[in-house]
Length: 163
Image 1 (spheres, rainbow, N blue to C red):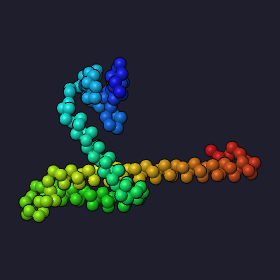
Image 2: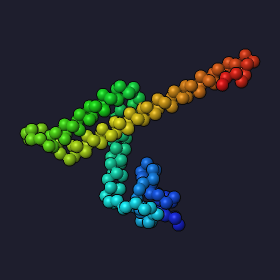
Image 3: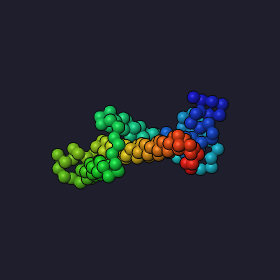
């Protein structure tokens, strides 16, 4: 959506990336508006690759959620899952770089490295989501506990004693 002052992505004088963070670009890659920044221009290919990479990770997260449902593992489980995915990426790199025969070579190459890296990033995001959900659940439980104490004190005629 283009406005008088640029588009939604650059309305405050900064181009905002896919996560909404201000970027260092001197122009808005969406509407082309020149932004008042003294920094050098960067290669527009960087813009597309970041966006594409994040889209791949998001698609993989959606695939994982569809397959496994919401995962709320403790951190020690996530390290195992993440380690397994990282190991598969390492294997793809090794089979790309080293000549271990035709059969092993099938596990390497650009496509396999991208697939495995996408899975590594998606699992890392899944672990972050699980940590965030856990913190929210703990905050809700704490609020509920305080509410129960307040309710109890109110019925005992001691309202306002909880700090």
